[in-house]
Length: 372
Image 1 (spheres, one colour):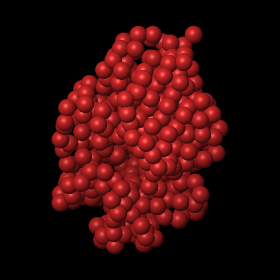
Image 2: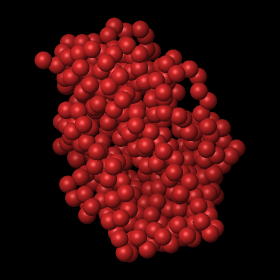
Image 3: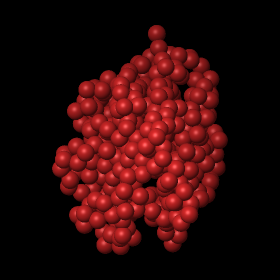
């Protein structure tokens, strides 16, 4: 008998983390209600990368077939210099042939999770504000979480001096490769999505921006001007952008306190991260499995929540630190850039498995093996 059988749980937020948690809890017998203040599910159109560590959780929750039908499987990650010349290619299939790295539209993933959650008995209420609830409350309400502040006090995030642009363009037939173009004080990431689309995230150092959140409308001409001079396919991609959003990038500390006896933080509410390792959603998906598994196996709720934080906090801290390091590495200029790119090119030619192997700790992790 699961310790969650018929226990009421309220999840605040119907994003990727909240819906994954709702599904994982319902699969173990909990009576789950999801509260979402937005009037409908989904987000501003954007792509997302789901790496193998998170895909394993979604597979374990029964979404494997639906996920494969809605996503592209990534072949590789390729780093390029400003002119579009290859610096390093990490072949994901060669290094991990059984692992799946997927590219999917964020709204499509949310739709799959919502459908599966409802089928598992989860109630999803839209257009409602969170209120006091019986049983356990799980706060998956994002980087501006009021519940994080209640547990940890008000914290002022650190502005990185970087601003990111997000756009989607039509691009049928693109190879399933995530490409990074690196230049002094800026870089651009792009990959195809199902349905003949291409996702673009472009980051520039821009110290005048001070507003957090990524739903702010941007000027496509300003985007093109900021990344003028980049070579390869980038000019052609940017020429097609007619709608873009931008957001300031802020560093937040991993929360010191994730729970009290009746509340637990999950995903960005506990550990917001910069988008330089493509692990924001992946960490939330891992959180969801671990939290549900702890509550399933440990009848004492405070002990289960303490175990959840103890398992997750060291891993997410390492991931956040690695993303912070990439924020610096992608923007090298001058002699530093020449030296760093030369080292990567040598590794690309002589030891192609070296760089993918550096992330075994990240991608080979399986939360279901850590706690069933």
